[in-house]
Length: 366
Length: 196
Image (cartoon, rainbow over all chains, first blue to last red; front, top):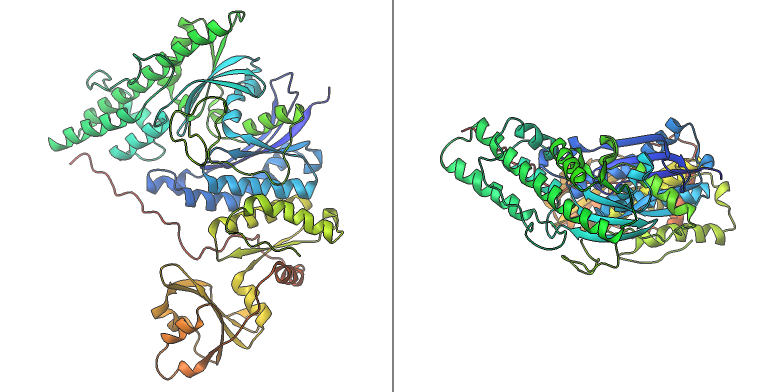
């Protein structure tokens, strides 16, 4: 078997990224030949969140530059690439359109096959790219836009066990930071602030834990933080101690929700896959960079006899290596897209699951 | 040349259309010497997807990508002595740029109709093309109103863009970037003071 070499392109949120990955779909892990990420944090910082139009503008002027750099760093030209994989959704439509358009130009110009990739599949398969995890495995995808538990049954076959009914935890972290003026992105800022704080001083809700199933909810947690913060402000200045305790309490609530619901999912996964001796819980997404979240999940995995696979930080947040790897697996299975490939702002990984929220013309949000 | 009016669907159609046009012209993509693309002003998303596609194709082929604004295209086909191109902006504003023969004499701008005339270099007699010359002229001071006439300009097609691209192939042009003329519609966050 000859290894495949795939160029990946990612522009679904606020990172413009390109990467070249080489490997065999049936014999992971893959080899990352280059991994270029132009992060837009500075452009969005003043706004306290990602501004879609600003993100789209930056992508349109950086995509080909990122691709050229990824090829150069890999020591290749497009001639040496077997396929071009691009994130076609879900995400911010402005960035997706630019990314898909650029990939089409590359594919047409270089006469190479085009493969449209679901961004969530990119995150889902990162554990295969980095650690060679075998199918099936359990995945917790936890980022600024997503919070899902998926049973990754086989190549391209996903079963959703649970999802957030409202916000993703990363969004809640960002909003917390915004309310407290801690800066953007909020995840690392809140994590720093929480150090030394007392997580027990304020009582934050852990939603849905008493319910059956593996769904999450984080909007009530956001509201709780705002109410507590307003209460403190009404009494005068909010001290450093108050801020640290608020952040610590908020973070602890997130960690507990994520680990306990993941625990329920691990039990379900074992029931449906009794033959698996060494089950794996893979975690992906930017929130997996949070140390408290990681250690909470590690403990939960240990309790359920799972091993936790958490990719290195740079591959937890958005990147194109994961898109290249997903493209490699899909292309190896004979999947390609033609030049009419259409970006999709909404695109659930498990298209058989019933949408729980926000089902509109564009499809299910989660 | 192919032309399909559409308010949405550019993303799906553009690349297949380019492939079809190359087929119709019996040109292999390998034999392209350059690609020209409109940069705007117009739909932000439309400008972005055209520019992104052109830059991708140019990178793959190692050929130049040439960006042509709507102003430049109109000035090119009209080819007058002193030309002001005015287009409809947002909320009653005008988008305009001036040219002498084919060379721009002002930067492209979007600004309120009431002050637009003041930005014109005053020398010369203007031929006004585009959708908004009458509006522009209505805000000109008395005494200079006789210094411009609205003229017809043929519609811009992809053929015209390609012709301009061909002319500029030898020049070293910067990479095309979308021409927005307007900052993103977003307000920075107000500072948060927690400590008093």
